[in-house]
Image (tube, rainbow, N blue to C red; front, side, top):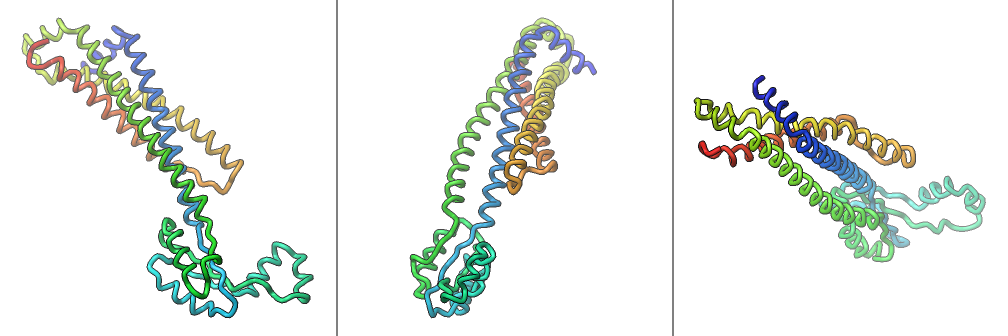
Length: 288
């Protein structure tokens, strides 16, 4: 109780510094939390797109589709291979374009037998597509895959992640030094009082506790405000995206809870360690 009372007293002594640190930490934690959620969600979207990527290979006339499929299934990169005979392919096309059924009796089926190949790792799509194109029964011009868009998204995500990580690092460092500055100001304001306490026998741990509590209060209050703002902002963005594109995945409440706990842990670390480092610097031995 003594440590808490002294921490609250410190806030009253220098409210401007405390408010500045609280505001800085709140902005930093809000941006950190929201950027982290958006990056996590973007990872989910890219992962969902990657899971839908498949390679389509059109077999040459007269090729044995089942034999080619058996060969491709032996490749270590391949998860599954589906053979679509040309009659089935035509039937599927007629479902999308019913008027084609009227011409069925007038012309021969021009579609080839097709292989649809799914991979264990979508990152190998381009490599496997080349291997399929090298098969005599297929040829390099008869392979298609939707990996180009996903590859661009993966590269974009890598760039965004790098920029976001740099931003997060700067926000963490800024918050850390803001906490240290506020604690140092508290120590300066109580320098004579602390000197007397140490001279009459107070332990260093007893002297340090109020400052550690002050640092924790600053970052925890900022983190709680940031979580409220960040969750509201993310829900608004997620709901808007879901209304526009319902197929896009969004983070579940459990995911947001996990991210919230992570932010609180980070806030405790920054508040405690920043305060501890300031106290350790200013209370070195008995020279206060």
